Length: 113
Length: 114
Image (cartoon, rainbow over all chains, first blue to last red):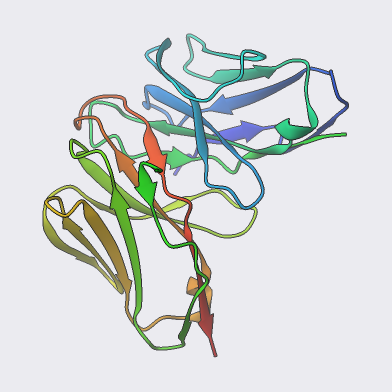
């Protein structure tokens, strides 16, 4: 069965650089969520999109932005990177009309030097 | 106070024993409850979902929900070394059929010893 695809899996950036993470949800899933997980921390909700519109916003810094495109894939753009942005970034998708069970991608590990 | 509380552990149980993981939540309007398993450096993997009071069993796993006490638990029977992982309790405050986020607890690290 198709899963949530995230790219890149690993990314190394310098401080103040920009990074873009991509997420391809499970086919027919209409909702995408972004989570950030620091070392030893629980996943923190950043932002979500339902039918290409922002549906909820969590602890996402102003330096970050995201969108969902017409093919339902989503991109998380991070600018002016800081050391503290180093984390695992997970994308999850769900079908909102159902039980809304979230399925997670493998994650993108961002390291900021 | 965090919205979803778990004991961080580690919880150590011998192989073959029952592991009991607990979770409390603060939003009384929460509708859906999930247990995810996460191995170090990997993504959360859904183990169980539960939506109504009582017990739900799936193989070696049993989830228990008590909405009056705002309490969710996960029992793992016949624990195996491969069960050693962090177990995340997650709560969804929205109604089923709506797009709403999961709020995670900090996770309980389970160690199954030989």
